[in-house]
Image 1 (cartoon, one colour):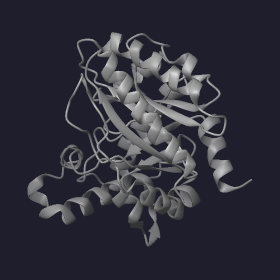
Image 2: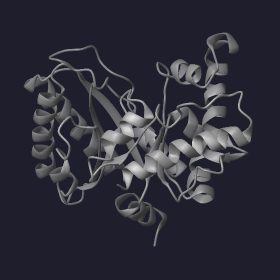
Image 3: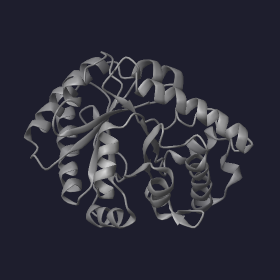
Image 4: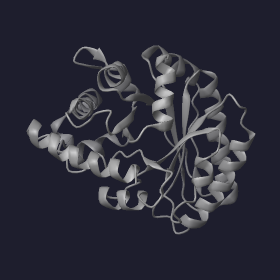
Length: 297
């Protein structure tokens, strides 16, 4: 079995979750602050990214971060381009940890229009996908945002997501389609119903050689995405934590039996740069165990 086939099987059938380690420019300072590294602790972008790579490397190499519970990990481009102990990060994940590597490919969100924020243009996407293949990446992730139940806006977001997904698939990678619904939206449940309908339309139009992973906000109405999870074009449906605490995110996820986690902030909750390696591993292990339990409920 080729590495890509082994990775596909692992993602589609494995018991566990996908770790999101892909904070980029705008969210990096927040992620570092949560970890106890404040802006005064680094000077400029280079030092900031070095600090966040050190944090991510510590998570990846922690004793509890193993393939027993972690199926995959989503990386920021700088993380993919960096090494851990002299070895490319994606290779460390797959060869040393048994964890499938993904890459965040979007360039952030466009300004709000029609109650949504679309993906910004990605003119260099083909080159990035080629590099991802060279680095041993299995799949990609691209995030847009739904703020309210606006039918036109949601249809536009989903259509754009699936156009990108087709481009990613044509490059030999598996796309994670992520049209997030904001957890504080006043029309969250209604927006999710519209979103589900638009996703199903797009899935039904995909050719048989295209498979996607859906990354979605945990729905207000549990089980909403069960039909999508069973669609032949869908490898997996994963849930984002969206700002919920680890406990709340896990409790909500546990009610959706065909979704697994792909948490970022919730995964790193309570971790600190000041912890000893033993303390860090214990704290991370508790988060991983909670998220894993909710993912296999």
